[in-house]
Amino acid sequence: MRVRVVRPGELSAREIEAWRELRGKAGTPASPFMEPEFTLAVGQVRPRTARVGVLMEDGEPVGFFPYETRGLGQGRAIGFGVSDCQGAVLRPGLGVGARELLRGCGLAAWEFDNLEAGQGAFVHGVAESFSSPVIDIGEGYEVYEELLRVQSPKFLRTTLAKERRLGRQADGAVRFVFDERDPEALRTLMRWKSAQYRRTGRRDRFAQEWISGLVRQLHRHTRGPGCCGTLSVLYVGEQPVAAHFGLRSRTVLSCWFPAYDPAFAKFSPGLILHLRMAEAAAREGIGLLDLGRGAAEYKDSLKTGELRVHEGACTRPGVRAGLHWLGRAPVRRAHSYVRNRPRLAGYAQRALNHVGRLRGGTHG
Image (cartoon, rainbow, N blue to C red; front, side):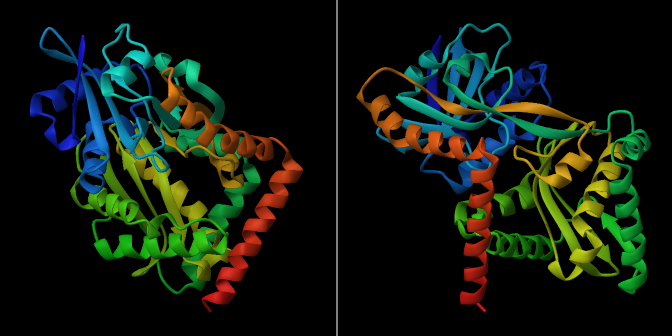
């Protein structure tokens, strides 16, 4: 077996189709982040760093390993920091390990923060595992809503009541668009999300041009059956009050960037939006909404189960791997230490909120 390294845009039509076929045989939830379209989109906005290792046997592609380069042999998962599902796409039973992949791609280290469960080649590099809450709507939205009536009765009752109040008090009919194509609606979502990041003391992802460019690229151009950029918007009349941009495959909707207009906060428009997304997705034949890694009260109320994702890095012996360890391991351990101690995590959250308030005061 040999590995040929290419830029995403250099993949042939035959290779892209082989990628899709291999992914279809994976036996895991069909995350759109693992489809070639996502890697191709990242390649459009990060052409200097995006790469794919194409594994070849007897002249046929048997695997694909998407990644980004960082210099000195350091690599990261494609779309690192925003991708919610990562790993290699390999022919079932292909006996290849992480070191062989890294050697073929000229990498000393490969870092991941949302490694897909079942990626056996990289299991020795896992440092921590996390839950990714999901909503199972495989039996239809009505079945899911009945489950909520048992599992989270107060949450469902309150959210539906707020939806009715929103329509009455905001002087307009509440309507929902599952796949909104208006670019202005996307710009509105991005403004809301940027303001939310600043308000909560977090780094504004949309201030990074490659991320905002990636989202625009996926919304405007990515419409494949395995990966389709999907903007969902909750309106009162013609006014958007909540929106979400994510990616969907035939069977999975990956929830990615939700936000709402703070002027309507008392109506919990983000929660209403998620219920309508689940309802519309079920009609489209989608069986799973992946809410993404990270704890949140709204996820606990909505979820029916969890997937597992992993964080860590795989390395090859050598000086460059040692440089990676020195640069990343202490930071990861510090984050883990805080996460696993609720009191410290609370202090950290309050500090972030304080930073957000200071930013708000600075910018008026």
